[in-house]
Length: 85
Image (cartoon, rainbow, N blue to C red):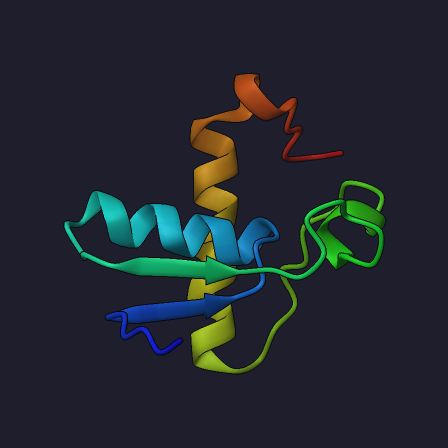
C-alpha cells in the first residue's frame, strides 16, 4: 500500500507530537506521525525522568526544543510541567 502525505514525522514523543500539533494549528494538512513504540517502552520522552533537553547546538534542534518548551509552559497544568524542576 502506498500513501502520500505532506509531512511525515517519525516519533510521537514530546518533540514529534508538539511539532505535529503546531503544524496542524497552522493549517498544515496531512501531517502523519509514525511511532512504533506507542507503549513508551523504548521512547526517550517517557524514559528521561521528566526532563526536557535545552542544550542543542544545531539551529533546527534549538528551534524545535524552544517550541516544545513553550508548548509545555503554555499547557503546564495539563501535563504537570514544572519549568524549574
